[in-house]
Length: 86
Image 1 (cartoon, rainbow, N blue to C red):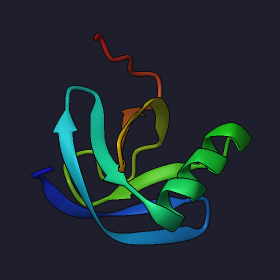
Image 2 (image 1 turned 135 degrees about the vertical axis):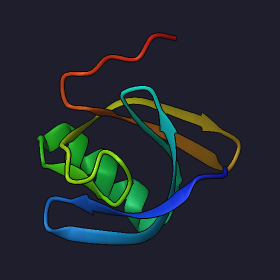
Image 3 (image 1 turned 180 degrees about the vertical axis):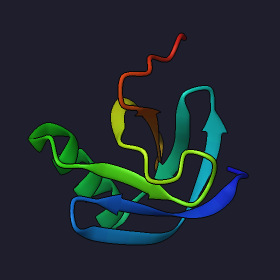
């Protein structure tokens, strides 16, 4: 996935560098390991999810889609209140 490398903040934990691809209303990221596990946990608990860097710097995000294909997991993060059309 091509995109800018930014810092993903989940609750009080920082995950960097994370390659995020800008989409209307948010970002898509391919995540694995600790960052993916923490993001899934946070989405169920309602913990804050933010991105530092980029044009949506320090916005709150919601996990709106998780797609798994083989060993790749793509997560869609939409700015809180935004909706993606598929």
